[in-house]
Length: 117
Length: 107
Image (cartoon, rainbow over all chains, first blue to last red; front, side):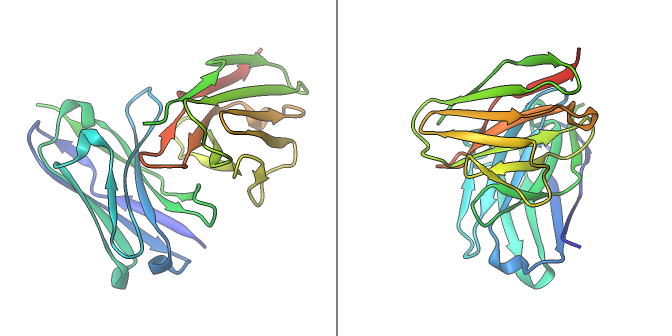
């Protein structure tokens, strides 16, 4: 079964750090670009970051310099290191696979990140 | 950044109705557009990609159309399982951007 599973969410104080992980199974992970998408409570979807098969990375402006995306193909996993967290980063974070036609065809179940003192 | 605007924000309809949701891009994205369905507490699900191509396993009552800046998602005959929130997304260029969502609820 093709599947993505996130982990690493939790409660963190403003200014703190958190590392999210996304574990893939059921497909050839190394051949797909991957994404992180977030959804603040009661709000819409917001793309956060992407990583290509060759390690090229992309970020939305509001997280540049604070978040770092990386991948480890040998472990079928990719990550989002989040530093200098702010209250506005509070959201459910989903990992997603970039499908053949570049839409997001497989999603994880999401992991909640709460930034609060 | 490319802005995506959906209309309406909320839509009330009945089982069996034909419904249409619109999505407008702030600049041309040719056909680099997807539609997703999301139910409360669940991850989004891909319905349509490349503006009009039906994702495998998605019922044929869903269809998408459009190109350039104007796009439409149509559900030909609403079923009880279709009451959810729908999002369009452009992936013509980074940052990928989503519409604000259309909540489809039961009339």
